[in-house]
Length: 214
Ligand SMILES: [Fe+2]
Image (cartoon, rainbow, N blue to C red; front, side):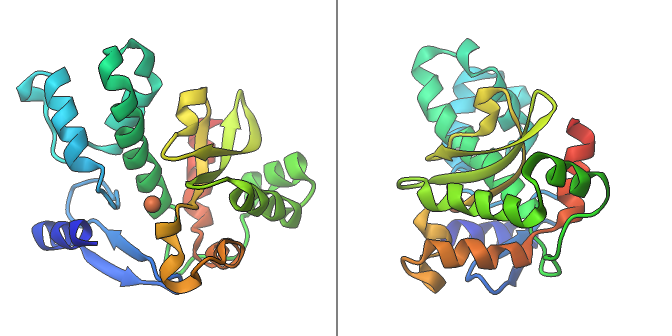
């Protein structure tokens, strides 16, 4: 947590405690609306420094840069691919994670996202059950995802900090099932955390991602 605290001090961010024992850190100012939980940033910066001209460095790297690194991973130097997969993945995943949560979140999606979820998964309840199941059955650390894959909504899961971008998919919603995300409040009860997490989801933001990606 000290990394988050540093970021709060350095950038005047405010933290909001929500019912999950997680901290939502919202950026102020012009550093996107990105929210950051980043043990990943500093190692990523060190790696980026080896890959890019000094003048192009942005601190911290916007999530878009991490997404581009992931989309082009195979073209990067072989000895950098594994650390970038982990660190850029962690950055992109957590940025999406924080942006998709709100202290006023919860409820259900509306409009075309709701229609698409119902068409793809039968009902919102069925979608939630499968999303949770992917989270519960992810062995060890990882993520459960709603993605757009070739224009179709799909549910998937990834290990560690792997991003769906590595598979050519567009992540729309993801929940962090690393133990660090839930153990303070939920101990080993990952299924309970996955259920409670729905109360934080900012469906307007997810719908925005869907509209932009479809
Ligand atoms: Fe995490």
